Length: 177
Length: 181
Image (tube, rainbow over all chains, first blue to last red; front, top):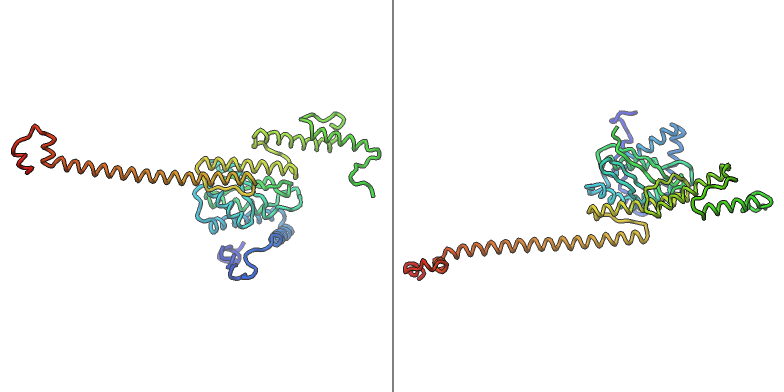
């Protein structure tokens, strides 16, 4: 592990670049297949290099970092309650084509939530594989919830398009450990 | 070319029996599997799947959407998607009941349309109510100010010698009349 001061790839929101200026003809959008091509090739190579567990951990942590940065930089104004957070996220995820976010259950006291994402960016339309693939999404939701509540969260996908479900379902709970 | 749609038995008896079982499974209520097939693992897997799915649909039809569907696969996936949407609508309705009117429901066809219309209507009614409240508050304040001004005027008038005289005629005397003049 390199020291923090010696790192080359520390994430910063500015790394998303000034796309509007730099792509006057092609614009902001790119086909979903291209995103999936990159993600699943990353997954392949990381698994071959570091194994399956490490791959899932890398994707979860990358998703968590993305979720935290997304909340800090893209969710404005900051919501004043869980309902407002969901309303803001629903709009953002829909507008960006990430997925259709819904809430099945929310317990604001114990900080336990059941969330679903339909037409998910990562998995909708994939073949039935018999296992859940949305590890990055798990991390992403955990990151958003962590930034919003100030507490670490554990998010787990229980249903996925790749297990035959049509909606991805996630359970989220505050990690009091 | 062999007929791919037929099960591989020559006289068709197996296929006929199997179709009969599946039809019964789909169309009858929760009947137990016939003893003749109870030892068949593959049949029992199908029987278990459809029975659990029927149980889920029965619970949903009663509004019991917390029923846990422990099935994978596309057919159960559709049932779970319905369950998920309804549970989301219930959560949305509770949020509205708690006073949050910033929610909207997307991509649920007529349900989205009706829910969003309801919210728009509630927002308009809330605005109208708040405007009425604002006008009432302004009116109450204006009335209070008018009453205060009137009381002040009465107080000032009551101190005028003429009013004092009119209010207390028994104190009538020449001196007071002189003061009025």
